[in-house]
Image 1 (spheres, rainbow, N blue to C red):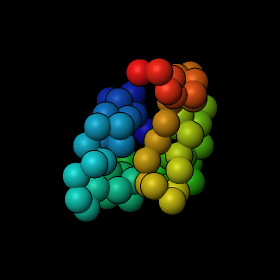
Image 2 (tube, rainbow, N blue to C red; image 1 turned 120 degrees about the vertical axis):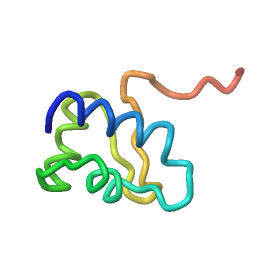
Image 3 (spheres, helix red, strand yellow; image 1 turned 60 degrees about the horizontal axis):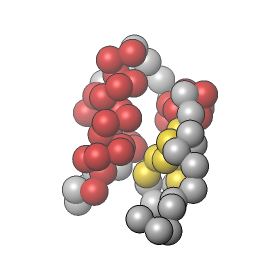
Image 4 (cartoon, rainbow, N blue to C red; image 1 turned 180 degrees about the vertical axis):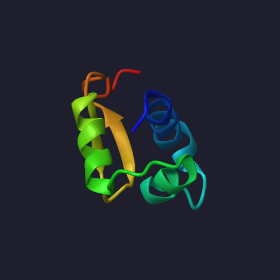
Length: 70
């Protein structure tokens, strides 16, 4: 996965995934990523993102827990 593909994938999963029909699998296909889904998830993890398969979303692990006072 190229750096440009990685950046596009993170943007897709963080901001565009709220649209109906958006998913990790669709993002991989639309962006043209040729490595396996498992490798994509591993690369996201190495970059500091956790993938939640139930929500089909990613979360930046460096953000920490949500602040309930906000």
